[in-house]
Image 1 (cartoon, rainbow, N blue to C red):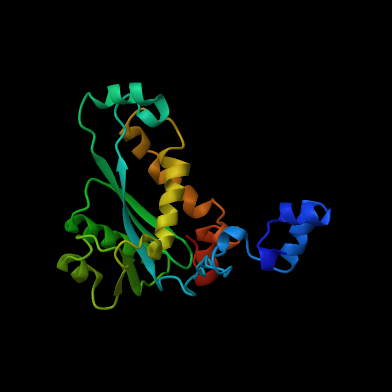
Image 2 (image 1 turned 60 degrees about the vertical axis):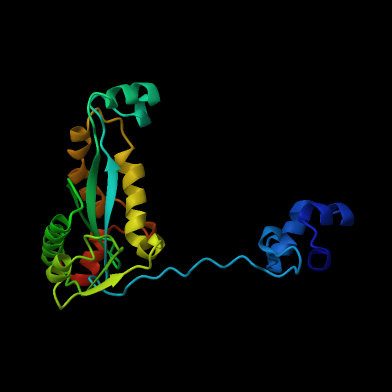
Length: 243
């Protein structure tokens, strides 16, 4: 009935006089696809399977680099926490603009280096990478490849010169941010657990907590992708070096 008529569990249950839950278990046992995964005309499965997650085997084999634009909080608080009326009233006192969070996340260990900076110019991105590379080197990680989007700062000759000939530069396809998924996931975690997790009364107040949150992320926050370990645990296990 499911295959030839494309009936759902409810209708099959009514027809056979058995509970819907029993029908559901039978369909699951035979791995029947959900109805909304099927083409209505042919009955063939048309929904694409989820992409296979990958992870590099060695620290430094690939570093994901990105910039997260974060709206600055007006003095007194922003609309996300105070509501639109109060937040907009505070915002009118002066222009706020954006803060730029520059990230570098190791694919294998998820160890993250990040800075709260004022712009996304090529000079800023290049200087950030010098400090990020030193951070990974201090933790026993030798970087061999970097992945970025196609932002102008990353396409500049200055950034290429800063990477040097010993580091491969991998650029993602245009409009495919999911390719740089490790750092995009870091951005989501940052937004929910730090940027908008508390009521900050000014942008300076939020920025002052960033270093502590980043330390928590690297040293104390368990990661599902690491089977409950922290990035620091992962680095220690793989490189034999405490951080």
